Length: 194
Image (cartoon, rainbow, N blue to C red):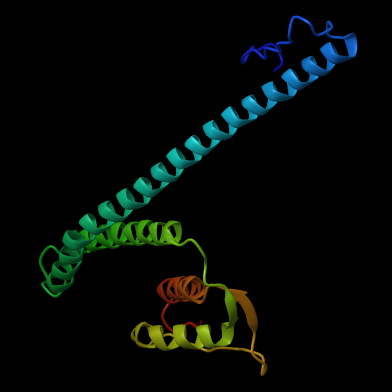
């Protein structure tokens, strides 16, 4: 096969048989080349199958590693966030506590992103279906209404009378809408509108 010798094809004839004709020799050569290509293709297929299996194992391990690290970081971080929220009521060292809280929240978001990535990697099929974006937006508004009220913000959903249907993963779409609205509530000055 090409320049590689993969084996030999031996053709034997009885002593009383006539010599091979040129056409028969050509046919044997052709058969040899075809057999060589088949052997080579089989070897390539086996190599490809082995490499795919190795890549799948590495991908599985990566997902497990991300999930493990995320869960291990999440527990102490949740405790840190909870305690800093309690300490924010104390007047002394408020700036330091707020800095700790801000950075703990930042780490928390990073861990959430890792967990989300790990969940996405673990899914073999995304749950794609028809979803009404208006409903997801209404749910997100309900979720953030108290936070908006505390920030002195006005929340309003402007949507068409008919449903706004898209095809996608409802969980992921809801997460995206929640993140966008959460950022809007967080960064809009008091008295503003979202």
